[in-house]
Length: 422
Figure 1: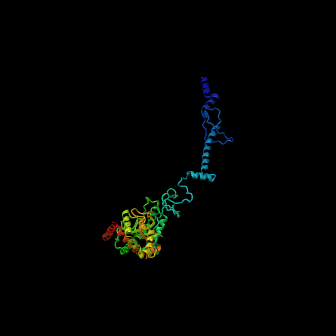
Figure 2: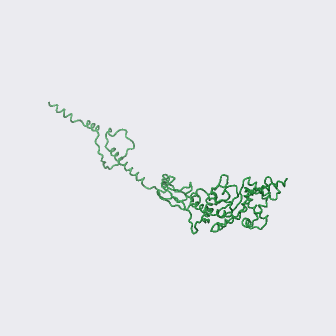
Figure 3: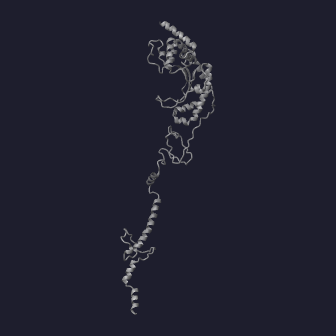
């Protein structure tokens, strides 16, 4: 009975060695609060092979160092954030960052400042150099993404002090033709369509009134609308070395069939510094040309009589004297552009009228100054010049497409000549 209590006491009170081992096996609960110590803990450089819980004799310094390192991680993150938010050290670094993140469209164009604007707001643009207008295809505007540029199309010129009238050519029409000569391309005319339509309307109304004057002087000319008398402004550049798409003048022609047909024509051309009034047959086909050469060879006196007309010599031949040779020479000089260098086929080189036979065009005309075209006297002046050419046009039509009376007379002359040759 007396030993049993001693055994219970012995079991409850273990040896110091056992107490040490039991305390080592059971980890102590460590506080998360960091204790301030005089010694600075040394941070571990490598991961320990074993956990601290299985090492004997630790004094808790490594645990404290790990907690300090965790807090230093937050300090490093704050430090890195402050470095990223701080401005770059030099201008070169800022330029490199800007070039890295700026797209090609956002970079300002070299040679002109970048335009600032907002979406849907018009940007004011100064006058650009010729060929660099913003309305031309392919010209870069230099706007940033989302910006829009509104180009206001120019309006037609104001009439000013000179009103538009049907029987006169307005000065704005000549100004438009001058501008077209300097900007002869489709993009320019498309932008200045208002000026073109106004000038074309002015010319058409003038042609309508001029037609009435021409009919008074030549009854064979029918009354036709301007669309059957005026020529288009577009050039045929298919076989031309000149690539400009437009004529730099307005023109119209009158004949028994309008601007087209085999008959001789009256012709008017309105151009700044190059206006012209003419009449005749230009580049005739082979058959009409053969008829003209035949008539010149057999009855040259008919053509020479027309060329000797006082009004024709005064207006078309610069007022030459009453000399047949000088009149013929002046007529040949006006048509020498594409005349033959040798005799035509079927004629002798020693023919008395060989120079007239070498011609390919049979025309007469006179240049007009701008003052003669503009103003209230322009219509009457042009109508009078066309009236001067009426005898010449009548002669050409009698040869190329003769009337019944002319055909019978020319046939009898041909028979008489044939009998004489036999």
